[in-house]
Length: 215
Image (cartoon, rainbow, N blue to C red; front, side, top):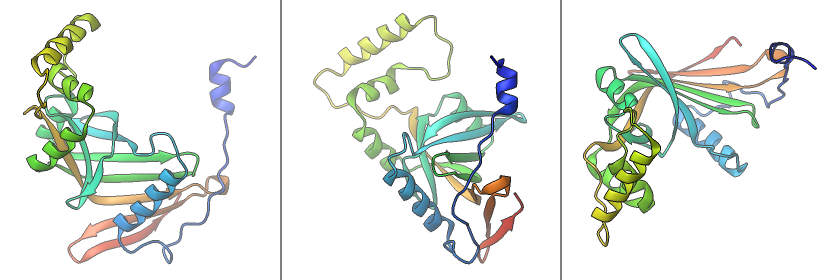
């Protein structure tokens, strides 16, 4: 039986996606994104709105998976605790990157840009739509901070549950939405023999500039 390194060394997947051409992609990257996201949702891929989010602090990157919750204000929105590690890193350095990967469709989208906070009313509306248990969790969990045990977290959740019995739960002041405003968006389509198609949109003063990149 092959050991782990041998298995990783020999693991191969070939791609045979449809061609991605400069002549046929949408002139606006948001239109192209919506087209690909719609295909991912229609294919019923698990967590099709999940993406990796990279942030930086003191020159060191960190990465985690977040869920895309909308395309608004010229960017891509997600929600988090402002005091979490990602929130603190964004406050120090707003430059960030997202990456969506749908292996079933042999597609990837990379987005680079600057993160801003969403308007408080937008965050209020989204928070109100969340399940009550998730609303309580946003109050009880000091996201990214060290805690002694799961039991301590359970106690904190129960205290908050009691606090809000019979009441609507307001959005915590330390929790809300972010929007990544793109400067660059790259669409990657897997093709045969690792000769993938890559189309990049760069934002300029007079609109989006498209270019094909070598695989």
